[in-house]
Length: 181
Image (cartoon, rainbow, N blue to C red; front, side, top):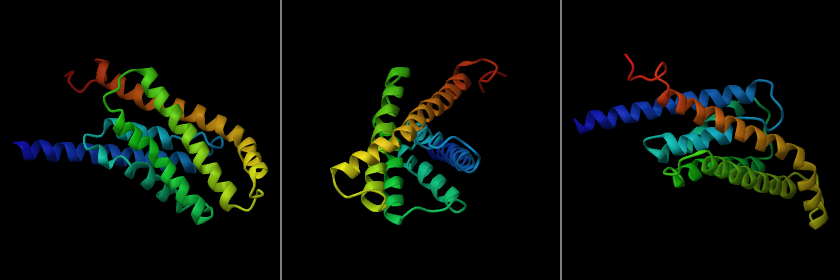
């Protein structure tokens, strides 16, 4: 009996991973405002919702890699930092699995958005050659990236609300619940 439950949990996790990866990859390929994507929100969602949360980093990494086959690439060092930074919400989701409520979830997402902004723009400053390698260049890089951060933060919070709100509705709305019928 225990093995059947484990298999069912694994299949449910794999189905959720496949859905999230496809959703994020498609969202990256469709027209969107720069930075307004569900990548970080899906990673946080996976970290919180998967029965086996260690699988959560697969979601953003697979989605980025899959959509990256079509999109033009950055310098490999910038991509490496970006890929690492985009897994942070998955780990944050694992660390905050027992937190409930909008404030804790939104706060976690904001912290992940800020971390992504800091890390990804530091990589752009360090490796792109677009900025001088001094404090003035670093400052310029962060200042010029602020409009993108605004989109990222709004997008991360929007998609977090969509994913967690959708899950809540499925779990609590009688017409959507699997237990009804």
